[in-house]
Image (tube, rainbow, N blue to C red; front, side, top):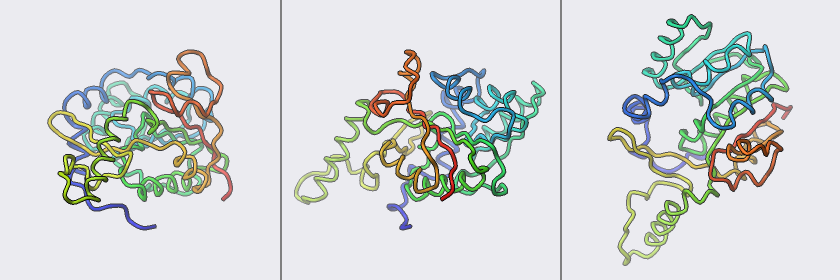
Length: 263
């Protein structure tokens, strides 16, 4: 698969670490654990109970600590050493039997067919900016899941009105690059693809990807996953728990529940 785009200065391992290791983001990822809208319903109804779970991109362990009692074995990994250190300290203080390691979602160091379930919580997969890496992440998760294992994750939606202004700026950037005489008002967008945005925290700016749900479903199928449930936070909180393709147009995060099948 061809590598995406040129290197982007607002996206690197160090940028990711700095972004999540300071300010409000760090506090949010390490504070007292609580479910976000829709999470408890989805996790309770679709994960394989009493099996093994890998929490990819676990951060400070928010979801890991909330659901650990539902599994016989649970492991949390994150690329950020600072967040993993915080999760480990919480584990020690509260004497909770969870293993935390520094790890990369696009290069999982676990045996094939090892976990009953995998979680990539709270839109974390969108922190992987390049399409080739996101697809590699799906392949890595497929590899470590047992047959018929469950993979759950959530994303923002490209079709949300929340991001319209950002996408318009990107389109203006593309248009002005085609006509050199026009001033390029959004030159910082040069190496971003449609759906990529910038997010800011504690003085750091990081590139982030907003998911096209239709393309995500296609990638999941290519990787060997069957989509068994899709819904968004808003619908679930209103009691609309039936899976619906209309959920991809909501303003809140979309949950994908998938199952490993034979390719």
